[in-house]
Image 1 (tube, rainbow, N blue to C red):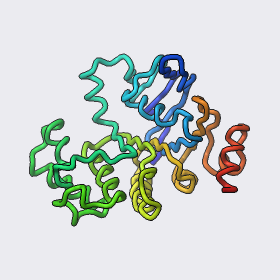
Image 2: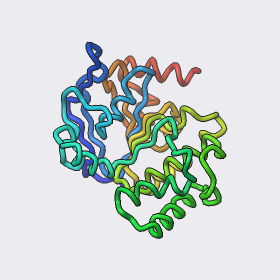
Image 3: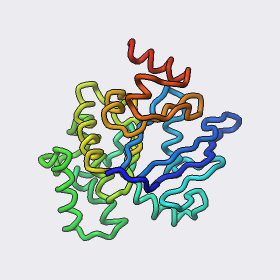
Image 4: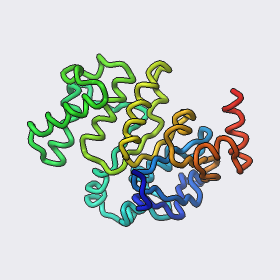
Length: 249
């Protein structure tokens, strides 16, 4: 259930690479239980923005607050502890190929949270069932389809009991017929009240699942609105052009 309690607050966020301004004066709030979908053309800065939320990319300036704590000011060990509460799913699955599916899920809870092997196995089994892959526990990632690997990656992120899930174009590396199975898992998470920030090109998902859609272009967030309003009646000219091309494609 969405609340008005902010989990992530971004203030005056900027990111530069040498002389290139990738993010420019980004501001936004993600509330508990809210699903934010970030859309926009390639090169808009969407993935960089997402990676700044858990400081995989360090902002050049500005503030990223997670439950009131400024991540930018934290020491490395403090940041590592806080990152455990923010699950991240990338375009590439990043599973360990030399470990079985269930071993991939158990690794962080055992090593980082010092969970017992029995408890980690129980949790991993429950999560694999949740993403529809209980029968794949003892196989290696190479035997899975792309969609299955991405569902395992989602389950692995969930194994740490995150308060927020960050998704960086999680379906962009998948064959079209595999996209739906991953989006179905993400939709279920949203329905269960998981706070999510999703960079995506899947406009149907954004329209159906997001509480708010943020349109990014040229390093700025140019428009924020609830999905039907943004897709049906965009106010920003750049957003109008982008959405018009998608609808007429």
